[in-house]
Image (cartoon, rainbow, N blue to C red; front, side, top):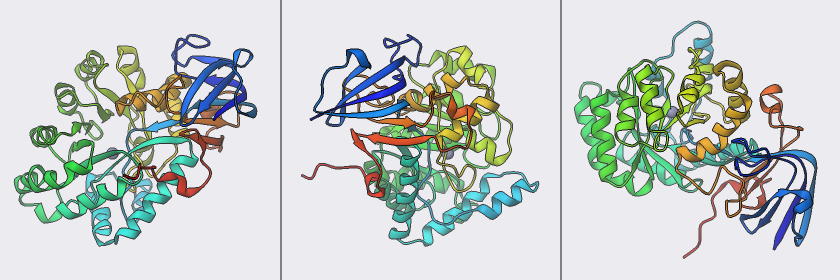
Length: 403
Ligand SMILES: [Zn+2]
């Protein structure tokens, strides 16, 4: 069963062998043929092969589905009062996470599952067809494992973040908490996760603790990624490169040597910028041109979490990244799609090419540039994920083969 999509005034493929030959591989008057959950053909409409059915999109623009490589979706409660206080002049400190930890521990499974479902649905409606999510609001063996088990129903990109902050009951015994994370917590969580992550920053974990935890995760079969450089410059970015992490996230504060290290590791370690966090904490914007001009691979992600960035909107992140972080519109779109795929080491998403997953977004606009040009406007008209139109909340759960 094949479907031919036409009526695409501007088709962004992220395949430089297509169309205008830029990184976005833009095809004018494009067409896509979908077979099952994969793309069977991409190119100009006049050359398109026949298909079993046809969909005319009415001269819309089409982009690859967004790949959100950084989110924290398993939690209970919300922190709008903290946001309001911060916007009234208080500074952000990592300790606010404790509020969400307490609410998450107290919540039952169905409350957490319902919250995940809502956010996963919100992401999908906003055009995100692949997302990562982390644990990190349980901070006990049972609560971290529960978060990963619940998240696994929605995405294969699950990340063990037991080292989000040191929980209050270990405040006077940091080493004891690190031992717990690398010991029983890792043992319980590694089978439920693909990635291991640490918040390596002021008020969270130092670089030695981070190295210990990431190496324990790697020994347990997980691939490292890292939060670093959000609140201050440190050795976290260099550590991420040294350990071959898939991504180092935030990078708001990065030394020239950090940027150079990321550029040298462009095939291995992605620099993921999270404009929602700067926006929501009223922090200094990182200048993306430093990373892009040096040759680093850059991703954009939402960092969706109830404290420092409660947005699930990649369109919003693109608009802010262009306006305040000096991405060009083309760089921002690439980073939110193909860049996110690289940050998750996925070669089946982020690019519209033959054999890739049929994950794409139909924009109610003549060009992807409108994502930044018309900020805050709901331009995502339709989302196709795995070859199927995604228009119902229950679509957000991943389909698993039943044994
Ligand atoms: Zn984060």
